[in-house]
Image (tube, rainbow, N blue to C red):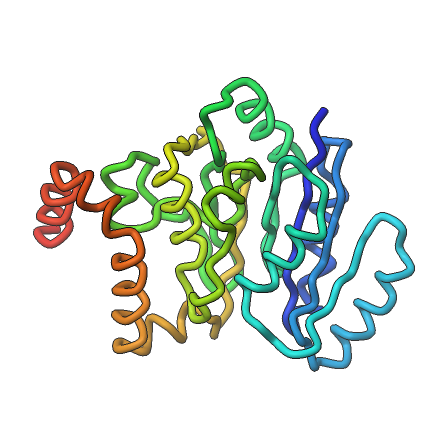
Length: 247
């Protein structure tokens, strides 16, 4: 049984962290380590909780004294971990107890696969299914159809360069998955709901979407970085773009 590193970045999210941590503890996959990376939190309740968690032998708590963003936080935790598989779990999200076990079964049996994810639901300010298209390369090149909490093969992700810390405002997970595809790795989607994404009134994603100039600039950075991947798949990209604009 391969070791799984569950990495949980936390920036002032102490009110939600216990739920995410409970999901990590509840995983039926026994060979796991849980690494929380405090990304420069200043909230007193969050800091108190993190201090308490340092006394829990089941958890490793790391800290950035100043916030560096989710990419840097996740990379710090990944580099500190020893798992052959990596499960990023944001401090305000949740996963089903058997998610890692079901995803690991795919990675164990299919060495060509770099990441495995599932279907997801929203909860919080918005509830219901995440309306992401089922995974296929064609749609993935138009927009991200994979959420951040996928089980990732460490060797594949290291080959892709881990999270690009230049993506401070968003899309770092999309960039990482495109990096896997560039290096020939496959992505697999499990046909059931195993992930729950909390929707808050204000988040990093809503801030980016509301700032049109920043939104476009971040996507431009993504496309520039992965230009060759798009050039190699023009026969897929152009029809998909046309459909997206018509829709």
